[in-house]
Length: 258
Image (cartoon, rainbow, N blue to C red; front, side):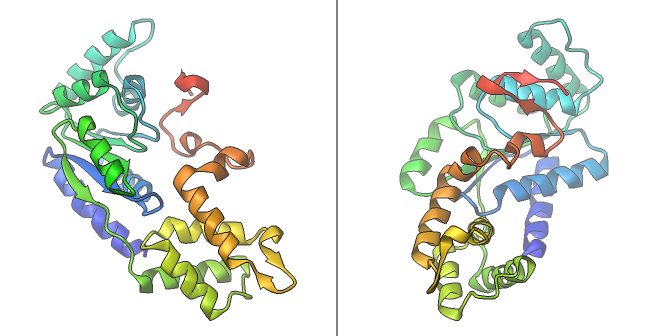
């Protein structure tokens, strides 16, 4: 499972360093965030300027990401517009790579800024959730000259191995063969679905005296993957933005510097 993600990430890294702007399209739970994190780690090891934006909904999110890529640029006590100009000039002197996760609901100003980054930032990679044709059509207005890249889905064999590994890790020995087949089919090539499913299966409410409530678990897993309701309802899970060392975005998308 990890091998094919590393190989795919390596191919994206080569294209980004050539100066391409890419939009990674795929269903929720297919591993897009893991790919961006792998590319980010590779670029950090190479020493190239790079920034990972965990949530991309406003122009200021990109500004905060660029500040982490170019820490030598002084953006204190100036307007955000002036800060972007300074960061723009820094990127013009030393090109880097910008990785934009959870790219959704973008504004016209954000798209225009990304278009202007062509020739400044070496490469831009945006991850967009696309589960159906309606969402695919909705992405079109967000285009900023980026080429589409489809997120490769995992095979049934890969998902089965992941499921067995998660079972062994969490001690879910009561899964039977029909339940495993049902989970692999419901995952539809999404490793994140299997991860979420096994996390939920640890909760007693999905078990009864007759065994595992497979249908209920599948429904709740799909809801958690598609709408991220699990993370919003469970306060013990930290926000996604806190997991990666770029910036933490507080309430109402107000950036809070570390």
